[in-house]
Image 1 (cartoon, one colour):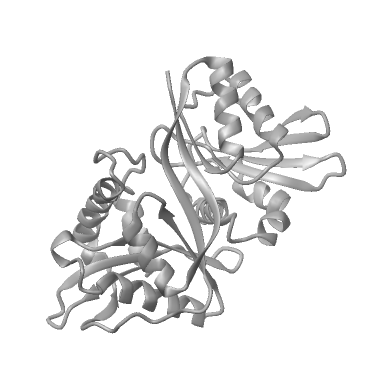
Image 2: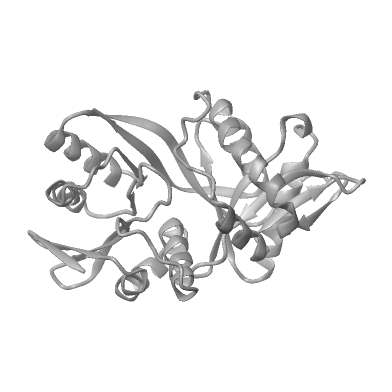
Length: 303
């Protein structure tokens, strides 16, 4: 752990997700929907460490506290894909600016940064002031939570759990999902920074039973929906993908509704992200009962 004191605040960097959760857990649990990305990643990497899977040295976890020691912000740099963008949760404005200075002094190369507004905008702007370049928006996202589920018009078929035998099809569809999401939002394919999980990680996800197919009456998969394991009582749905030839038949609405219903039936809250530039997905989720919680953004620094 390293400390960066600033007027009225303290930034603490951790390399151990367990120590981070011990320091910030109560703060994260107080708003588990907003903190969903950070908490699910922290818990996943903590579980992997218990299995003997080491984490990259570049990973860090951030806790922002005030003069009284109360936690007032958090973040991480634990993305498994280049350019390894930090992800920031809400924090005081001065903390976001101080974080930019700390990263600059640590000589960390930051060319992308994701998370809550305005923290990411302030941090990115200060990074460009210190190191040059300009900030561009890669993606505007919106986090939603499901209230009362509104069931869609029923369609044929049913939901089935994807298994390790489906790893090739799941991998193919996840790759297509990323490119199609860019196109549907009016961006060139490949704009989104996420990379596919490697084969071992994909098998772990399938083994956990958190990926589902919607299959038609013949048993043929026509849609894929995933969900993260619950973290602090919240599970996040995604990815959600329907191949182009199967769209417009209600597969996605019914699959997301059924996955969401099962999660809520376990007493867990349900949330998901949408791309604000994709009106189709936003309309589908709103019709199911998902309501906006907070806007976030993925930013890039062009030098």
